[in-house]
Image 1: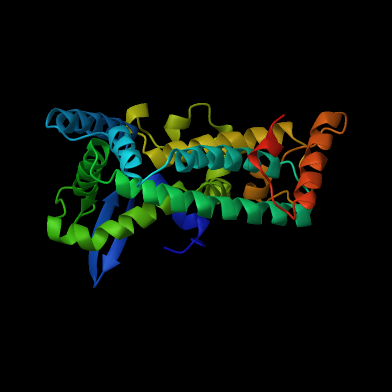
Image 2 (image 1 turned 180 degrees about the horizontal axis):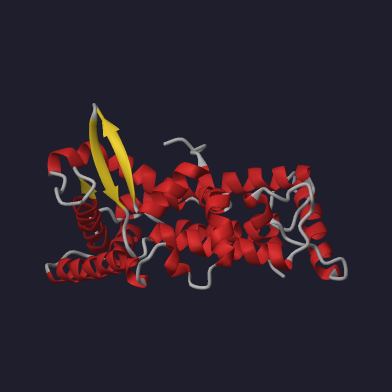
Length: 287
């Protein structure tokens, strides 16, 4: 799936509630998950964790503790994961307040490096807990998701067989990520076809003619991001140079010139980064 998917295509698929894949001239229909279905899947996963635990399978915490005893995992690595997660989250918040393009690029590069380091650590930890009760339950959940969401027909009557799941499964995961991506949803929501109607409606559920539990998770996201974008446009003085770009408008943070603490805080972070050759440590983000 391309990251540059057309906003109109995203809006079409989210609005109608399904996506279509064509493989070797054969069509497959991915029915988007409703809120009710996602809640039921979470319930199913929790039940499977309980079943696995009763059968003697250890949970993630127990397997990690065992790995520490054998030296396959350390407390230092565990602490580093927590530190990186906190730093990345805090860094992203600071990034939203930075307007200097050079400083932003430096900050973004460092966040990318931190994400890569975090990914390396979490991948190592995931291998340790690959056969935990939680992991096995998640695998069963994913299998259930595939079987219940992919069909051979547009009416969702003929479910996919297990042989074809191997073929279509990766496309579904890619499509899921595509339709859940904030930038894609924002660009789709800002299309005239949707945004003008959204702004004039009093009940968002009427847009899709469904009850709350039948709303797909992507439709929920479309409503949520549209609401946030509309409020940003109504309550924020957005610069002319970014007006009309839904992603930039959504991410824009209005700087209050009277709030010296915010300005000084950002400048202080930039000074610390410069002093460390562009690097940032967790303690630098502490207020």
